[in-house]
Image (cartoon, rainbow, N blue to C red; front, top):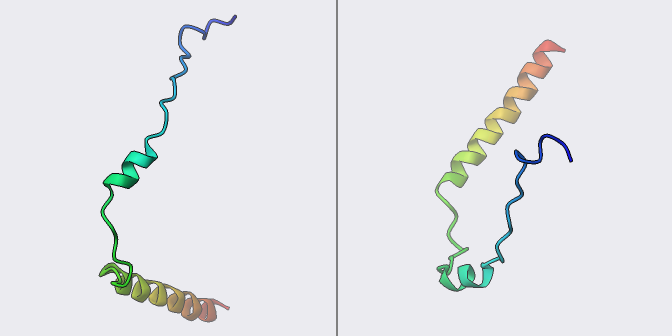
Length: 59
């Protein structure tokens, strides 16, 4: 036994409640794209374009 035994405490794990969470969840419509998806694409394209431009400039 070490001196850390009183400090270290292991928590007991509770059984998962996934079936209950699935039963409560609302159905999701996957056909409609999120509004932020277009912004994320625009940001990613600008970031990649910046890498290409500055990479060419510094090369």
